[in-house]
Image 1 (cartoon, helix red, strand yellow):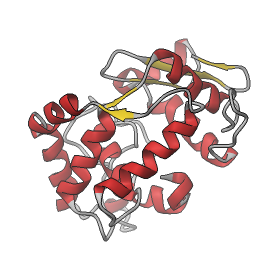
Image 2 (cartoon, one colour):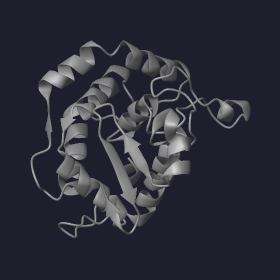
Image 3 (spheres, one colour):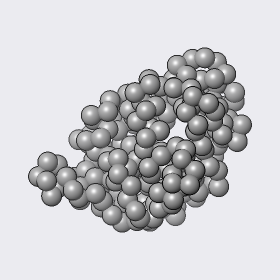
Image 4 (cartoon, helix red, strand yellow):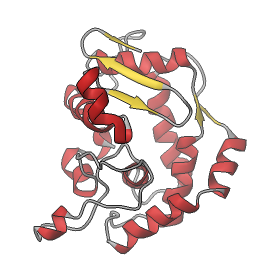
Length: 212
């Protein structure tokens, strides 16, 4: 989203603050409303509400297949073309069928008028469920972490995937928000930009050194 829409557009709709709440908590950052400078938005892109919002910004207004082509294209380059980037259809179907909480988050943001102009709520949700159902291995994810550690250049292909400015923004938010409501403790004790996921994986970046 940062690469295709730019910093200002992304952070018009998504914040960069830790929520201090569970990853799927029904809460928005309302400080922009209080300051009369905007509407309530997700606290950050690494909790569910923020990730749904991020999906609405990628290829805004286009159909799911176009959005998916863009995302999977980035992922194929991110993992150094080391394998196919595929959506697990069974997982996607399960995600969509059991997504009451995520739909509540989306409707809450819709009520707050947080979505960009051309977003369509159900389309953005289904795209989000697909993104959540992409299959990767520990090895391919280590290349992703290595790309972030390498300033946005894939360590196995030497191809530039992200600009240094994008990487700086991503690592900053990972450091403060990437471990959900344990982010502060993890940053204090470990000190690395990291991202946990419900699949059980933990992606860790040591800038300019390595990714795990």
